[in-house]
Length: 129
Image 1 (tube, one colour):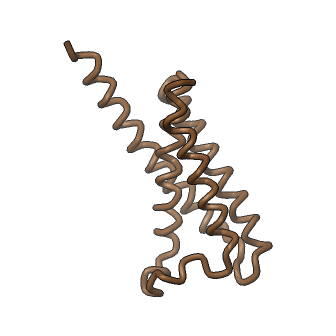
Image 2 (cartoon, one colour):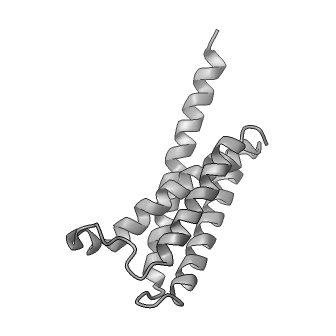
């Protein structure tokens, strides 16, 4: 649990940020509309960070790498689905399956990059004097 804590708290706080953004009728008024035209990329990027944080947290619980990745992806994808459902109740927002797919793809990429970083860090630690 000690190794999971540095990742778990930021993951929970970040999930809260995503929830708050989803509660806003216009979540990113300061972002140029040309960027918002690529909302699938924004979803992927937001959930990529969540996937990375969840990968660190699940790996910190001592799970094997494959199980940690699967759990991180499952949690991020389920959160993305619940986020889309939540948006269906926000005025001016809609639920979109395409956004959920982008959330899941971004989470998979983020978790993969985090897993690679964790493997690299562990490899270095095992050869350190």
